[in-house]
Every structure is written in C-alpha cells, then in structure tokens.
Length: 179
Image (cartoon, rainbow, N blue to C red; front, side):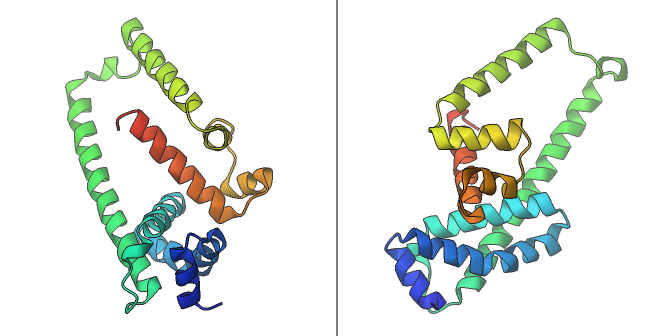
C-alpha cells in the first residue's frame, strides 16, 4: 500500500494505516532527531510526540506535500521547543542553586521531605485515576523500568502502539497534574 492510500485510510481512523505510517517513517524521523541532539532516549521521546501530533492533526496535512517532509517539520518544531524548555530549566536551576548554600543542598529538612512525600502521593493518586491500560504502561515503564520493546512484548502489542499509548498516558497525567 502506498503512502497516499495509507493517508486516505488514516483519515478514516484506520488504526492499521496509522501503524503502517508509523513503521514506514519511524527510522527517518528518529534518525533526523538523533542527528539534532545525539541523545537516543530524547530522540525517541520527541519522535513519539511527533507522530502523536501528526496523527492528531492528520486532517490538516496538505496532500500536495510529502508526508515525510511534514513529519520532519513537526519534529523540528518539537526539538526547538524542547531546546527552549531545557535552556529555561537550566537557568532556573542555576538561579535556585545559587541561592542555596552548599551545605544545605545535600539534605532535606523534615518539612521538605513531607512536601516531597505529599507530591509523590498526589502523583500516585493521579496515576490511579488513569484508564487501566495507561496506568499499566506508566507502572511498567517508570516504576519497573521496562523498555519500549519489553512493553510491546509484555502487552503483546506493536511497538508503535505502545509508544503512542505511553505518550498519551503521560499527556493525560500532565493535564491532571496541571503541568
């Protein structure tokens, strides 16, 4: 099946067409991002976000353009946003660390520990409120350390499906946490 036919099917919400498009373009998008940042986990995360964004807005794709070009433009924008966010976080962390004396950095006060525990409890409550399949993916990936491939095998689902579901689960969790 050619890309044009896959796009037609994807516009009709055919999940198999989405999976084929994902599999067909994954190496290209991931490779592009890997060349930009030289960080495989970050490249993988951004590539998953790219496909999620593209699939959510597939009806806005200009059929006169190449689908791979559209994906790379989305990936580039995500990478630029990530770079800006990283710079902002680094500057905030530097400012914060400059305010804290060296001897106070290594240990938390009882109040700080209590606040950290409350935040963890809140996070766990929000994770429990997710749909069971999203909750399971979050649990296996972030608490038990499963890789994407191990998740795909464990859940008996295609790797592309696992990546998109995990991205959506994290997005829902971020919304619940007002991040």
